[in-house]
Amino acid sequence: MIDKLLEYDTQLFLFLNNLGSPTWDSMWLLITHEFTFVPLYAILLYLLYRNYGLKALLIFVLVVALMITCTDQITNMFKRGFARPRPCGVADLIDQMRFIAVRCGKYGFFSGHSSNSMAAAVFAGLMLKPFYKNLIFILLFWSAVVAYSRIYVGVHYPLDIVCGLTFGAFVGFLFYKFASYLIKRYVSV
Image 1: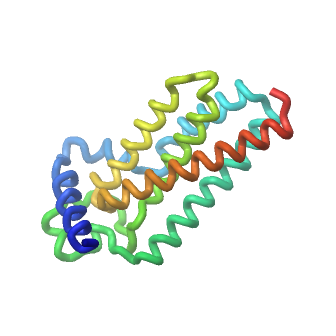
Image 2 (image 1 turned 180 degrees about the horizontal axis):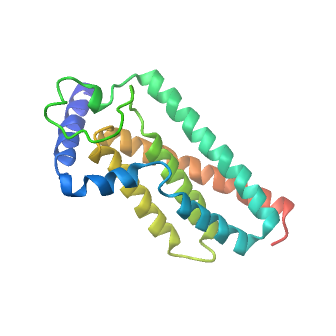
Image 3 (image 1 turned 90 degrees about the horizontal axis):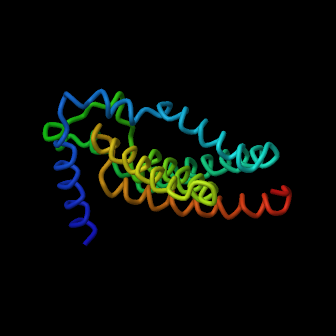
């Protein structure tokens, strides 16, 4: 059963990865770069500050730092535990795929980019929902685009992405609840 699932995952990866073209490669490499969205994060922090105040912003910064550390460390634990090679590291696939990433990495299950972007999207979207009710949908779309970029550049299978997004949503929700508790307890909004 697992072997069949991994076979389907590989077939879907090859299909999605081969949809790319050199015309769009630089855009997807920009999207997948980890520092591209620093301005977005800065805007989200500003919106949190504007709507909750400085004391709350300090809590948010600490909670987000804990959240990203949590997703990164657990993602790395899963990668080492499952030891599933990335598609760019599988000799049988390299001639069938488009690999345009800067580097390949060793293991890929599950995607750290996907889990981190989804955790940030869920956390910020829920914290800001009382003020910007549709922002969460924009952030979820942004997270999905970042996740797809990992398939496009050839470093993750779709299952890596889906599991990363799912885990990120769970972590983002947990840290949203944690931050909400801290805000109610220590900040008068």
